[in-house]
Image (cartoon, rainbow, N blue to C red):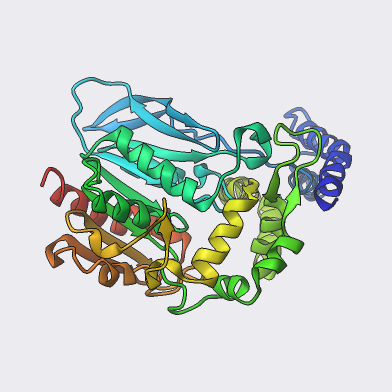
Length: 408
């Protein structure tokens, strides 16, 4: 019922959104003699703020049309090389010949935001790598006839993707997928799968949430599974392809995200309003870009979401050696030949310090020469895979690690 009410509210707000957009556009006409007046700038800023607050944010565009390769500008095409009901494997194909550079599979989180959240990560790596990414689909758009999606299916998808890419591949998992990525590597190692990646980089992932628990961890561990089933799981209403699907709605998760830092979000919107009045276009555009991505959320399949809550946040199955896949227990000690890098941010308030780095100890059969840890000082969760510190400090170290363990 709440899902349907939210959809109806958003539809009811559409006329307000359209009115605000048209008023804002009219205010920007160059012939208007009042354009530069304080009153008109304030009105124009009010209209844009209203327009944005009443918008329905869909999946953003990638906007990665070119990249620089050895000083040359190269065009990019988006190729979906594998398609599954809940995820596509997207290749950012660089339209030039003769490139023989390492393949990188970026595993985007299935945790509410679209894969475009990692746009900065992709942009940085596609200059000197063949980049692929998991592009998860909005569960509300997946017909019920395509079946359910659970935690085990996530692992299955990753094994299939790595199989398609072949053995000379490096995997970079960001946040939530660190657990299924490690599980997939352990299973592939046990069964001598020839497509085991050369290296795996885990960035800010909840491998063992008992270590340095954060507010996000406490939210999950402070409730039993029945609470989540009764309070946040809803059925997709008519009007969507996934009608009838049980999901964890994106708008519910977004409200949770924002409630943890509501004062900060309010102050940022006041600043945006003032920046518009002052004519600070750069700051206003930075706000737009961030919130265009942050406010675009997707529904997650309920079976997968509940599996993740239970197996990762309530029962800590992977670090305890209790995680099962295809009827077999996952033993991280089976991983011997894959290099492993962990990355954490000192100020990460989503994944606590040590929750990812513990993987190095859990994977005790990997030689020390194939292990490495990066802890970036003064960096929060999003800063470990995006932004200036990522580009200037973290990414070069990750690339060096991949280069060191390519073809070995």
